[in-house]
Amino acid sequence: MPSIRTLRIFLAVARGGSFAAAGEEAGLTAAAVGQQMRALEGELGRSLFDRGPRSAALNAAGRALVAPVEDLLVRYAAIAEESRDDDDLAGTVRVGALVSALMGEFADALWALKREHPRLDVKLYAGLSAGFAQQVERGELDAAVVTQPPMRLPAGLVWSPLYTEPMVLVVPRRPHFALAAQPLEMLRRSPFLRFDPGTWTGDLVDRVLAQCGATNVHEALELNSVEAILALVRQGFGVSIVPQLRNVDWSRDRALRVVRLARVTVQRHVGLLERRQHQRKRFTAAIRQYFELR
Image (cartoon, rainbow, N blue to C red):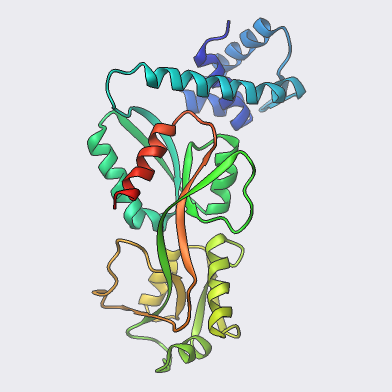
């Protein structure tokens, strides 16, 4: 019967598309991974991969095996968790997070968990919400901190709210352009630094502009990073609409001013995205509990 380790390596090959990629994840050479996969095929009596010079793509039999193996590993993890004598979280968890979330309260949540559970090893990956959704669905990440999805999620994924951030107008204290006195005129006349409209946060920015009636802005640059936008605003190059990051105090910022837009009710809801069944549910439950108690 295949070992739990062999089945985990099988999933790593399925995710990475090669024995080398799975080896990097498991700390093995590509040759060692290939040997284990050949042994797995021998035990099951069927071929699982279409092998190329630098790839190992799942064939039909391999693809059919992924879901049962994932289910088996989830069940095994649940048994292992129930057999523990303490309430400690341990082992490696792969988590995606928006950089802006790491600047805010999610970073505090991670530090709190790490202090309480020193054997917990969190591997963080920065990126964008849409990309994380695909990685979580494929099992490459155990969970991800993302903006609330603007569309219906696949049946195997679930999003849980953690906290909310208002969408605000940010303007430089020392602009390199004439800055109007009224918020709407600031938006209409100033160089506008737009968050990529193809992203989930960019969709919120478009909703803010529509809600306050400032759809005809003078777009100067398009970026996909709150941090990059803030840096350019601080240098006086334009204005922007961004989420006011939770647990980050902008009121003392000497280069940045936050302006509230009247009648704007759009908010960014940040939450935890995970599969309905996965092996690190105790970790995600602990993250949700942290924010429930705040």
